[in-house]
Length: 250
Image (cartoon, rainbow, N blue to C red; front, side, top):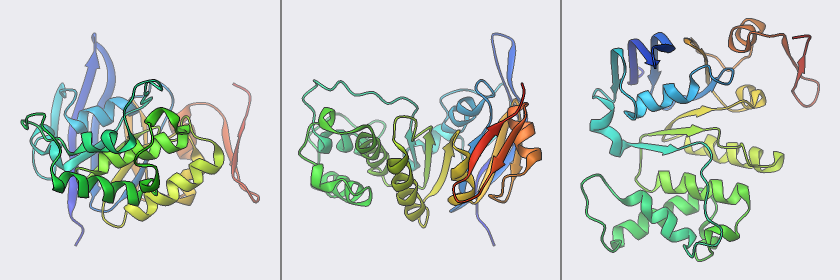
């Protein structure tokens, strides 16, 4: 029997009296790998922040591992959109990842032996351990993104949220990153916001379309109905060797 790990029931969210999300009902099961797709401004990032407890729902209930989001924040990893690092700031890759070991209510102290073991394990999973002494600013965009995911993994989360993780990564780096996420998915439930529709057919198990309303599709196959609902403009997915998009007249 599948284990329910995330449940949203009749959730609404508005900002300045403008509806962002309406009557959201969705269920996520343990070890699912979900792509959240939809147009800009459709509510994808807002949906993530509601599940993280960073925003309060205007109506409805949200349960993560059976609890309110803030109660289980230590069991969730999060890589936000546009994580920027000051390239001149003298902080090492290892120091960045160790930040993920800090728990709510724990005073800022020297990292423990256990923290360092967790950080090394997370870097190894992301194939970045050999760079642990380098400054974060010396890395490429794809390498930095791996480090930030390692930071989220250092706390040993059961759920991992990623918001546009490949936005600053080249095509080769995107493929490598999603291959690593697929491996992580054996033990961690993953939800990723993405505009890259190729990812849907290649890696994920479930698709959630967000455009104020939320539609959950328990299959990775993209359909024309899903594309029309999510983007509200003519989009056709073509696959002959390499999947790509064709945009019709808007």
